[in-house]
Image 1 (tube, helix red, strand yellow):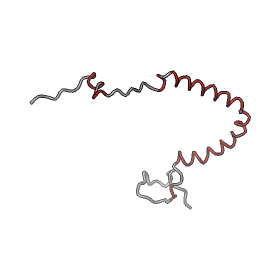
Image 2 (cartoon, helix red, strand yellow):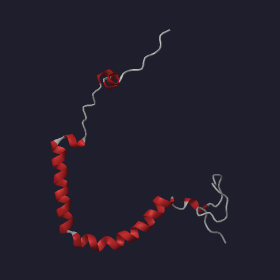
Image 3 (cartoon, helix red, strand yellow):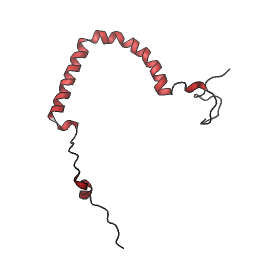
Image 4 (cartoon, helix red, strand yellow):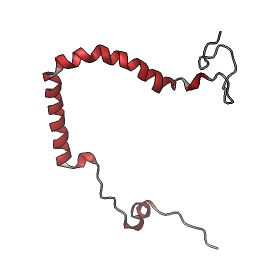
Length: 100
């Protein structure tokens, strides 16, 4: 019985003649020009509307609080207190709600 030979690197690259034809986003001049145009337009948009943007910053700070609570802490998860997947059953765990 012959041992199965592993394919060479060239054979792996030419597998079934599949050439994706995709060289990447930055390979096209049109895409680079589009990025440059978007960067310039974004700059002028921000500089012209800076007064409007600054007036919303305190509200964005307040909005970040509930968003961080939901996305970073996993929300309330029902505050069931019980459950079968407790990682630690210590009374001072930060994941468990305080009970009186």
